[in-house]
Length: 335
Ligand code: KG4
Ligand code: ZN
Image (cartoon, rainbow, N blue to C red; front, side, top):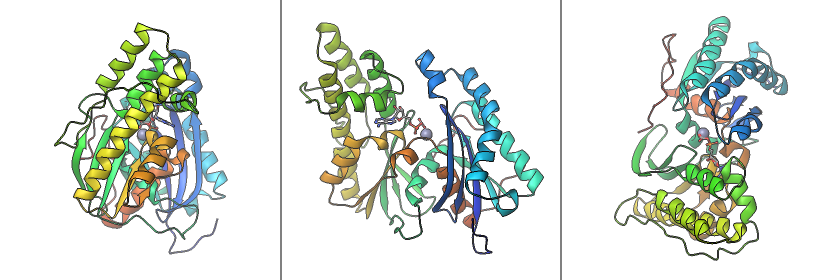
């Protein structure tokens, strides 16, 4: 890796609910290395995340993952200018492993430490590129965060400025994918398995859409219940039910996001979070929006540490680093 005074290399560390991750990012945009040790095989055995199992896995994986991220970046501790770590929202036990490791490294190497909101990290995955040529997102923009725990629509006028437009009133979009996958007896995590099951199938069933007219909020629990009632009544082809469900979620997400982006005269629409990896969502949003749509490559939509390192670069430019009293905040809000 090249070294120079005008290059800022940040090591990001993320213990998320189903992966331990570390990455090195240069100047907030250039991805140097990105290592993810998935816990999905372990959690799949239980059909979901068991918090104690997750934190124990993080303890085992964290340091080796950091060492691999440095090795793949062909860098050493001396080439790092800062450490970034997720402080929330998330599972307290998992977050603690990351924060303590980040503090230890920052203390030992005398590096500034930045605690980062996981959701803000998801947004900043959109600033990452394999090289420096790509244009950065333009403000004002409307961002749709769709993850396992959140469905948030935000207006961003500048770096670090978030105006909440809407959020889910019940299940998050990813949560709906995961729950419907369970109903259909597809694998964990539900998003990728529903996408795969739906591939090539027709969305035959007209499932309900909660438009919540006059509001930018979302609701997915009625849709989930409708799928449950549909499969309880008769034996329907799983692929067609999965396709119908996926289409209903995407229809609502796209229609409401595009409408809000026009209303706020956004320059761009950004997608972020695990569900942003969904092909139908990416394609439909691009197709139905006259405003340019940006989304990270699929591996940077789901939890990763590069997004945290990218995000912390913009913190480093605008605020002081965090102190040794930095603590986890399992219920941390973005807005
Ligand atoms: O952002 P993320 O990796 O973790 C959280 O912060 O929650 O999001 C995970 C969520 C899960 O609910 C997963 O089912 C969903 O993202 N997901 C997808 C896809 N890939 C992951 N949902 C739909 N389609 C996908 N291809
Ligand atoms: Zn996430």
